Amino acid sequence: MTVSARVIPCLDVAGGRVVKGVNFQNLRDMGDPVELAAHYAAQGADEITFLDVTATVDARATTYEMVQRTAEQVFVPLTVGGGVRSVTDVARLLSVGADKVGVNSAAIARPELIDEIADRFGAQVLVLSLDVKRASGTASGFAITTHGGRSETTLDALDWAREAIERGAGELLVNSIDADGTKDGFDLELVRLMRELSSVPVIASGGAGTVDHFAPAIEAGADAVLAASVFHSGQLSVNDVKQALRAAGVTVRL
Image (cartoon, rainbow, N blue to C red):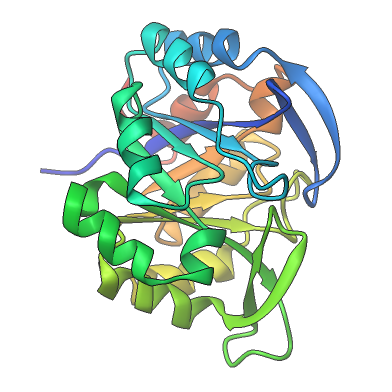
C-alpha cells in the first residue's frame, strides 16, 4: 500500500499569537492559533504542528491551555513543541490533547531525554525537531542551531539525526534556517541527505513559496511537507498544495 504524503500547516506561536518571520527573525502577528488550526483542519490538513517558538528562549513551558483549546476543536493529529524539557512535560502535553511532541534544544543539551521519552511513551510520540543551517565547519556542511535558530552549535546535523534515531526519535522535522520564510523553495539537498540516513519519516520544512515547491521535496525523500507563511497569508490553501502534489503524481489524502 502506498503511503500518502502529508501536508502539515505549522503554527509558530509567541505570546499567544501565531507569528512568522524570515530566517526566524522579525516575527509578525499572523492570527489566533486556535482559529487558524481549526481553519486548516477544515481545509484538509493531515496534521497540525504547533511550535511555541519563544518558550525555550524565555526559559518557560509551552502554553498548555492553548494546546487544550486547540485540541478540542481540531480532530487531526497535533504535534506540539517548544520548551519541552522532561517526560513530565510530555505527559502533560499528551494529557491536554497533543498526539506527538517535538523536542529540540533540550535534547541537544541532554540527549538522554530522547531515550527517556521513547522508553516511556513510544517512538511514535517523539518528533525530533532539527533547526539546520549551512555551515562550513561541519563534515556534512550542515550544523544544528538551538533556541529558535538563534544559537549556532558545532554539532553536525546528520550526525545528530543518526544519534537521535538510534536513541528512539520516531520522526525528523527538518527545518532549514537558511530557507525559512524566504519562499524560495525547500532545501532539497538537505532533504536528500536526511532521507539517505533516516529509517524514520522525514518532514521537510522551510522555504515553501508556491505550489510547485512541494512535489520536489517529496521527490527528494520527504514523507511530509510543512509550511507556514503561504498558508497564513492566504496565498495557498492546504487543498491547493494537495491538488498540486496529486497532479505531480504524489499520493495524497483528499
